[in-house]
Length: 210
Image (cartoon, rainbow, N blue to C red; front, top):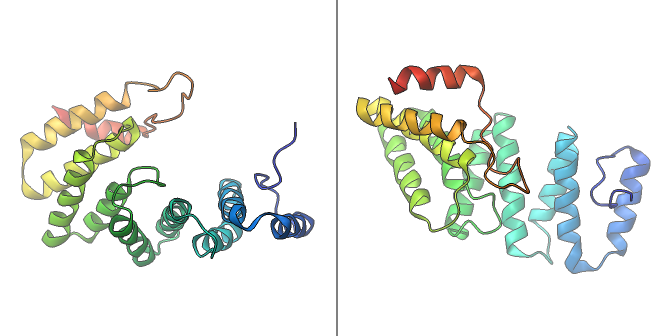
């Protein structure tokens, strides 16, 4: 079986023309999801500019479903972080926190992503807000994947180090190492939730955990 027309990573001129033609013929209520899925496929294939354009169209689609709009916002925010546009990323993450506090439609780690940006600012007010976001995320009653919990603990370590709370640092480092060593959470989806940390991060955690 071939790849669905809206999932293909191809984006040369014929592929672009064919996609837009199929999109125009699709039912209006389905067009947003096709734009979003195609944008994600292009992003994964390294077509960053094209991916951003399609995801922006998905986010602004007049016949859109809000949870797909939120998903597009998250992808656009993540891409903004990658290109160093931290102001745009923060704006989008904050919009999701305000307008979709349940996290529905996202990967479930918006507060963690926003906390990471705030901690990079390095000032006490930003750290206080980051801690509040981490507390809010941890208190939300939904399944938490190990890779998100791992990031959560890395952020907690940053806050605790700034506050000189050595014991909190040690406990968080030990918890992060446990998460990194647990392996897949879902047998049918072995990559979902899997912690992927480079050796430098693990080595630092080992030093902090003692």
